[in-house]
Structure formats: C-alpha cells, structure tokens
Length: 151
Image (tube, rainbow, N blue to C red; front, side):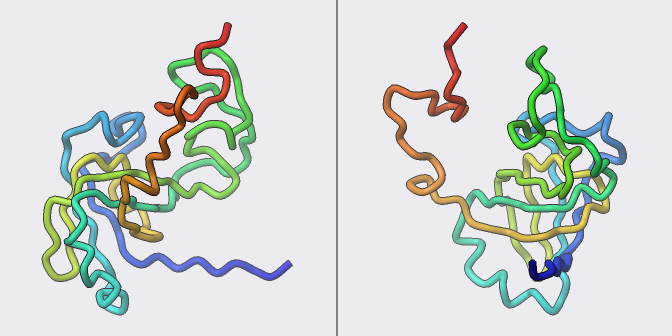
C-alpha cells in the first residue's frame, strides 16, 4: 500500500486552549477564529470568498490515536469510533462547517470552528447546499442515522 503524505497548509488561531473549552460541535459556538494559510498555498484561496460557508479540515494533534470506540455525549451507547464524531480516532482529521466572515490575504475569519488553538489546517472546501444536504425524503435526513426514531 502506498504511503500517505499529509502537509499542513496553515494554522488555526482560536479562543480554545484545551478540549474542555472547545464546543462539542462548532455550530454550537458563536466564537470567531482566524485561519492563517501558509504563503505557498495562498493561490488556492482564489474565489473562496464567493462562499459564505466552508468546510475546514484540521488535524486534532492533541487527540489520542489508539481508541476505536466512543460514547457520544448525547447517548449512553458506545459505538465504533467511525460511527461517531469523536476526535479520538486512528487518524484524527476533523471536519467543521463554518461561516466565512472575511478573507484578507492569507487570513480567514470564521465563526463556528471547534478547533483548538494552534491546530494544523489540512484543507478548506466550499459548502454546496445541493451537494452537501441530500434530500432523503422519509429518512433521518437531519442526522443521517438509519436507526433514527426506532426503539
């Protein structure tokens, strides 16, 4: 199997210094954060400001990587870590949908990011409602869980 090479493209500055300060999900916070993109990746920011919401992928560098089960805060049942949003996972890549407030040079101001201060930025992707919010009539579209409403 070929190796994987992952390079940070920037760094996140947030008001959250430790996990106890960060919200469980970014959308539960009105706090603003700044993302600085490294100079060699700045050209990749062209036209990003056309999007009001973006996905921020970042590396949870302070998470454990040896945990394969987790109990979400709103449940009492343990699940496999890949069925949860736990930051404790073999490859702690986090995904957070944020509101893009401004983009000036190499700096993005965003609202709703749950990253800890100093987290390495892995990628940025635009949010597209038609692609990212499928219309699953009759299913658990709000969570994507197939067992929603059972039991």
